[in-house]
Length: 461
Image 1 (cartoon, helix red, strand yellow):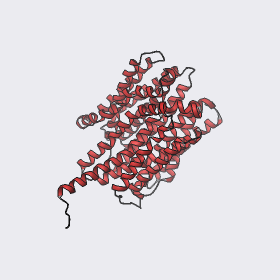
Image 2 (tube, helix red, strand yellow):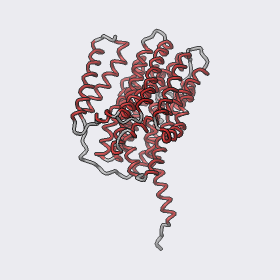
Image 3 (cartoon, rainbow, N blue to C red):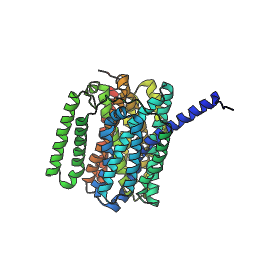
Image 4 (cartoon, rainbow, N blue to C red):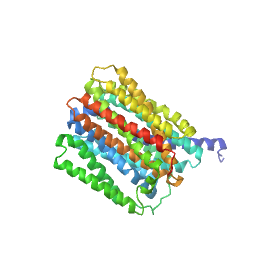
């Protein structure tokens, strides 16, 4: 007797597939965000085992972020040309392999190279997952819910990363923080192969190879000069050459993008003051956030003597607000626009940074707690507002490339935050004094981002 499927069964099966689709795509993004936060509390242990000093720790962090920042826009073009599912699964496989290799790294140089591979995998995952969400959820309401679930995992990863990383470092060793990604990657690969359908391939979509190469050279050379300048001497020939290479590559990038037929970053977008402001503000917010995460990890474990797990717990006042407050921010932005919430977020971050000036090796953690709470809420007001502002500043057909540009700008800010603030802190005889100098610079950057947001968001000319 032939069995029939009831409408209820069909609806249930459809809902189950959509749930699995969101889960598979969200797990990919979860890995990307977790990798950015779980590492920081392991830095002292990595330095103890593999050496490399202060600059080595900066490279462990920045190798990932440089690759991630520079390849984000090109990965979007690859998703269109090769198919988003194919690129997403390839990114998962690369992330899985690089995680295992990172855990087995015999030297600091190998670990840095593996971190760069992780950045390549992460760059493939983010634009491909966004394309797949749009493909599988064409209805606006469903797509909004799917994007909400996808974005919510970033707050969860940011909140869980330091504590989970600290626990693993203290109990099983720093190498296990990379193995944490393995089961997540395997589950995401399994779901992706089982339920995702491939997107249409746009084989006519070209690649901006010259623009991509010049961008990588510019960012990598500038980072090298900032990270190695303290140890080598700011006037040493390799440092001067690196600054010159960064400047030449940056000029080449601008010329290539201005003249190219299919540029990775259309410069015409920057004629819009709201878009330009969002790029600058995005760089500023991640400059501060990533720089603070890097410095505070060393402050907690070196100046205050915390274990890795205790240091991870100490970060919770900063990270927990990012797991729930963006939903409130989204509602506020929907009612009054992005300018005031973004400026308020920058003001909170700046206030938190200034309060940290009263933290030293013997101060009460209550001071640090207040500063981190303000900073955490500031981040969760600023970043969603920036995304809303940049999408609202361009035509709908350019929303994808504009949001990708914002993400790339934020990651560039993360690279510079670790490099610049690390160089300032490392240039002092006492780490706490150097950290305080870095905090002052950070507060100035944040205040600038807030003023620009308040003045220019919502303006189109």
